[in-house]
Length: 248
Image 1 (cartoon, helix red, strand yellow):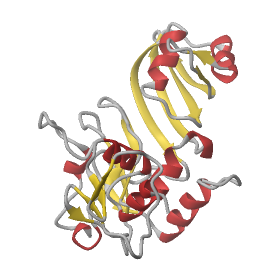
Image 2: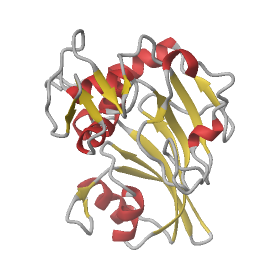
Image 3: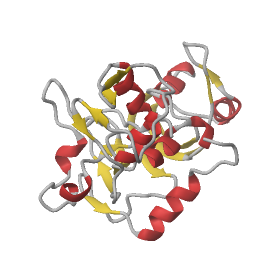
Image 4: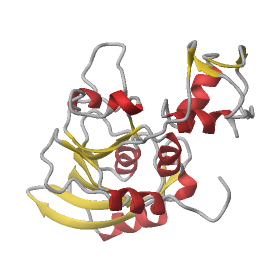
């Protein structure tokens, strides 16, 4: 098994997060520091440690759905002491003690609200965020100015961003009033601040952004800042949404 996949299955991070741990020299295998990616391990025989602490594959995964409010960072810990999404989860009532800490799957900006998954299932987190799995995310976007059919077509065909990447999605108008527009945007590839960059490229300024759906998950019946555990059927559907025919 690849080392990054093993670390993801321990619940310590996603696969991408595991790569960063490896590259920063924080991982050892049988006492040997590993810094290059692609290393293979025998999960039954090898002793793997992160920051000196032995890690093993989690026996139990947990999945938490959070309706994220503005003002919280999508990270486990902030070096400046700013509030993070983990501050919203009541650790006294959670099962963290039996299965390790959770981390946010993907990122929502500080000023973005909506559906956020927290889990210690690093392998699923990898599949839900990697572009090749094409997991759909739906947003409600409020912008200054009036959006029109021409702009919607640009979203669909693809917009060239400042770094020459092409971003595209399916958009439909929800409301236009008093010089502001609200539209729904569905994306299948997640890039940093992608929606704001797309809007800027077509001359629109985002004033409010809410993720209303992530794969099959919605924040229905959850107030901002509230969370709950996923139901078994939701977990099954979530895993099905992150399957492709090509090998991972």
